Image 1 (cartoon, one colour):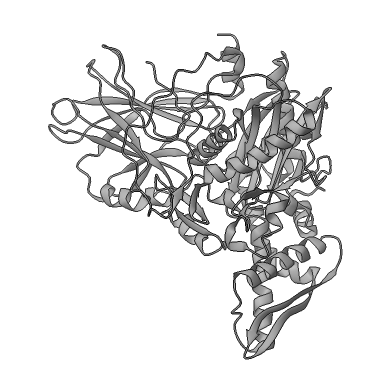
Image 2: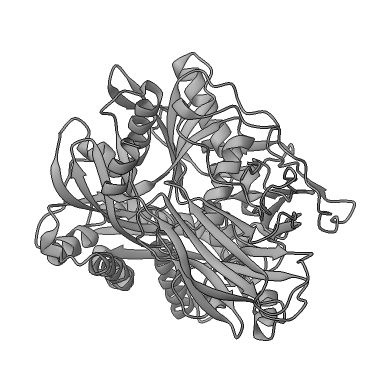
Length: 613
């Protein structure tokens, strides 16, 4: 069976040779190729074949986000990139030691912010963040939570009111942003940050950079991982590996130490929270269990402080805060700075002048906030992280006392309350062996160096699937095909057959998550198998093959049994979860699912088996 592997995240068709097996190919960017040392030259990329969504009004221009048709030339140094919610960082290995690449301003990170300035020019990083307080509507920040999501999804609907910029629907129904008179996909916005990092690396190294290892939250779903890979291509980078952030931190922690130890990585960043349990065997990093919350991070701590300031504003002035977006953003910025200050001191003053008018009188926000105030406001958020830790340990049959070291990663992990609660939960002080802001980028650089040198005995990663992948059933139920924490890479074959006589089409909606109700999970897309051969109910049978790479990237194919006919098929992502839910309620095109007919897994023994095949 031969399938074309696109970098373009739009639809395409695959024509198989006579006698070839029928194939269903996803419309999402497909799983990465084998390791560089065994990678063949990529085939030419087919162009999109389905009609695009309706064009936006003529006054709005959609920025082209098609991936390059040719991959970057495979030469030069591979860098590691931490594409963060609040800040991003890059690192590289020189003479066996990883180094952070500084920004133009001399910082070790750059803000993950993209803006349109007063001259209608796109700016990125520190320069873009500088205009957040004066032009928030034209400044995009925190977009990592939106990446890879459909515009009509409940998640995006909830987030729309939290950002000052305009979130709109893109060409393929995905969440996008509007800056001026142009619409940018989230892949394009991400690529602008990656492009800035790439430029910094080239200036610092004095050589061209076209390859990278890019990190993502461990709890990112398939669509989000594919979107990050597409963003890398748009930035002119060949993404050698999508690496989970906690795993990257573990690599930085264990570098050069030859440890035999079980660790837990607690990664509380600006917008997401991840936790992973790893068993370290020298240069082998085996992920045992992972968990997380993609809607829990430093920005949520900021929001609690902002809400408290607005409560105090109403109490002092007798009216609700009614300031504009600029005033609200100024309060948010002051809240974040106060939160950071309270990690070092017990009290701080917040003063934001002229935020609103009450009658004809200008009013300020002028409040004293103590560390105790902050801890009271955010205690529930910290408890949420501990519940995730407990669940992650329970899923692999471990207790807190079974963990040798706890690594704290991410800027929000500096909070004294976090460190105190971690000590209380695990019965030991968390490790201080890694830098919270730099560990992820440094670990990515170490893996990048291992890939580049190709040395025997280099870094070996064995990861697990963060969330279950399955299919939607009639009635809205969710059937898990591959369970979470399954060792990767993994291949599973599931048989399906028609549920009606002379059925012409099969629809197989695919979701990722743990809820028994399909609509409560993350919708990945729908396999649509058209032009089925004639036959009675149950006589037309397909083997649906789920292939998940070591990066948690999904490829799905379907092979029809007993015939050499080519079946036209697409992997549709134009639907939204609500339309899928309605069809699942009473669908004549549903498939009947049998037990898994074949399964092949990863893990330590799977890795050893592959090494000697």
